[in-house]
Length: 416
Image 1 (cartoon, rainbow, N blue to C red):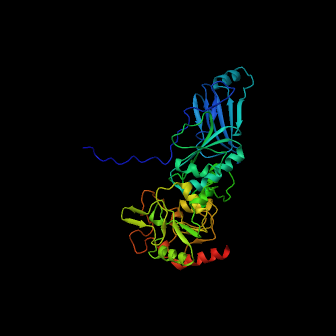
Image 2 (tube, rainbow, N blue to C red; image 1 turned 120 degrees about the vertical axis):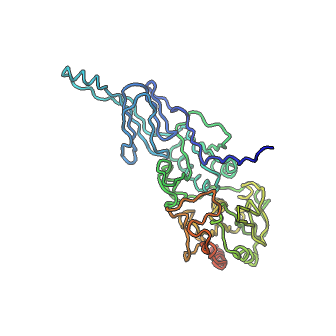
Image 3 (cartoon, helix red, strand yellow; image 1 turned 45 degrees about the horizontal axis):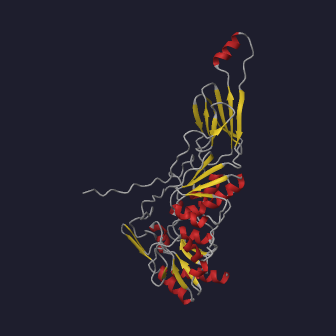
């Protein structure tokens, strides 16, 4: 009888640059690329390599090299200049000194300023979290527009169907697709633990927010930008004819849930009093994680299950508004152009996208997810860093009253 084996955990990110730098130079044996930071393969001989951050006007690497691959420690975008010098050997200089001849000067034999125009660039998006991915994709497009490159975006295959129409000039790749040839550069987009690792990411997302995190990593303007998610041509056929609201109540961690027992039930009842059909578009109707069980609210119409993300875009884009949590479907609704009521406790304002209908109270513990003393463990579904196992557990959302959400709904309706 075979033993039950625990499924192998997939790595958050696979760093797999080409074994050797891809870009040739006029100097025999000298090659470079930007596929794991700036890399330069130097032949045997007497050389000196210099890396310069052109924007900061700062030399960040300057060393002798022979028969090695020199690389920058930074894997994110830096507007690099590469300089390679041929340097006289100590023996040559000593011989000239003994003959009272002028000493030889080093000679610049190759230089290159970062220029991705028309070149193949790969962006690998880490993990399977939909909210993170939707937050970051707009900055991949901004990078493509800024540099004029042929951009390939490698990501979980589930998300390609909802992104391709909005970003027709990006080449989308799933993990099973082959890597493009002759890659000039590769960038790894993710939240890399420990989050104070400054070689993989220039800033801490807990300080700057999810979108600005990607913008700084890719060297583009950190202005808030929604993802472009377009309904399909047949969207109207699957939408209810009556006015409706979409909600999503499930999440990837208990701290993200609205942990008020009456919250969703009272809100759904109120929406129905206002004349709305209430569609729950979560993927799962019921989730069980250890001691935690969560189900969709009583009174909703069950639109959960094995529906494509495009179908969810089609449904949500026709809703009067969307009510959700700090989770992927809220980002999806924002990208579909629908007003979002977001119920939040464990993250501070500015972490997600801005919505005038953010529902958060500050009278109890809150925003632990942005506390740099804590590092959230994604595998720990029930994490409550400050009050786990106490009467204060999850009080950040437990103390969000249903009436707070109802008043926010009223304000949204008045604004519309």
